[in-house]
Length: 561
Image (cartoon, rainbow, N blue to C red; front, top):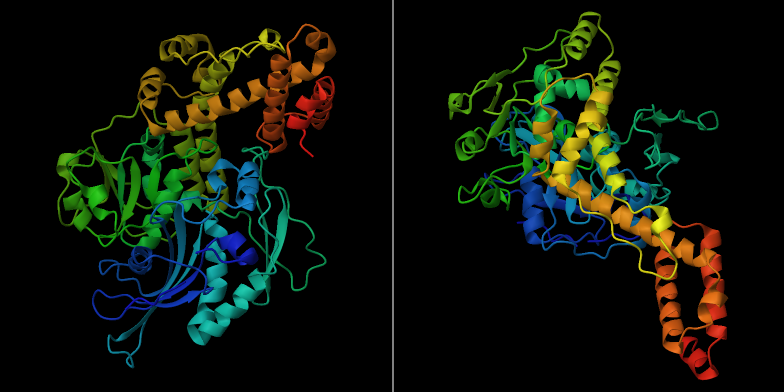
């Protein structure tokens, strides 16, 4: 049976995880009990417990011996249950979009151990330790698990209690800051990226090492994977995969094990930075998942999701999906693994499907042969994987930026001119986005200005307009522009002569101005409007001046004691 765990741990443990630790041990063929949930006030529904249980173990097709680490992502049952904390809002306002805390999903970071043990009825010792969090800090949390899980398997609950006690002393994750995080006799040093970081720059050097004893374990990133290692078998198709991810196409990743599956899915979803990934993604998914029917139904079009699986049964169940990537065992040798081939979906076999990208999709852009040549040469010269990853990440970043910059320029042209914003009139509206006007603008301001790749850019933009990523990008930009417009209007009011304006105005008009100014001030003070402190002070002074000009009875209504 499942142990009843009890959401929302208090203190810094909750700030980091907004979740907790779960230990899972198999018992029988289908029943996977939660052996331990910590801290005790981490509440999970029965459906969530069941999902965590099945997602914490490789299925029978994987045959993972020894220690395996992987990740999963699951929907929180009933949407957002716990309140959206003030520190969540503060963190999200400063963090890059890819690292923001998720309000309605949990990430699970798994450390699974399977070793032969004759004293156990099944013949194997099998156990998983899972860290559940809302933060996508894949690299940091997997590093923590590699320190904690081996100790936990020996010492059980007291070990987790000691770890949680240490985590309670950690500072909250603060974008832009380098943090020293002590755990089990090791200091993990890591920098939390900030929204203002330049995407193409390397992370700032870690500091304050000389005063730390023992010397810290420095992590280069909280989240970035070894992109080159993840993409080694699909390097020749990276650009096609980038297009499929950009367009939000349904993509099934069938891998031999949960670690290969989860890393490939996470690598694919990281391809669009700095663009926000707006679709669903599941690094590891099983047939026991509560959303299995939702994802496998044939009564409607496949959902916009990148789905990582290891069970070949999905090939049969999801044959109607337009894109299926089958990858083989990861090879650790220096030689480049055999590259998967592009194959027609009709070549799919229910059993024993060979590695390949099964799709009828034709890439809009030509392959970057110079990049592939550099990467393959790097393999021959035994170039370090982190250098190869940096090359690949930079290429994908520049490709995404070249695609997005024309959209950003066109969107900026829809903003009303500053001189058209006057203090005592409602500010003009942002002009609507015209796809035809944008496509016409590409002739003189298109991606060809920043990218050497040739191809059907117009066709790619036309398909992009129908994707969740265009919708997500446009909504976000429109929201930011509307706030900027409101901030400019507030500044225009504060720069005007308010006493001259009040001379011929009725009391109703004056009171209306007070109420509107107060509303803008509240929004601005809540950091929703991008305005300077001096503007806020002047707006407060204007409110006091206007109220002071009104009769005493109205003053009493507007400023109750």
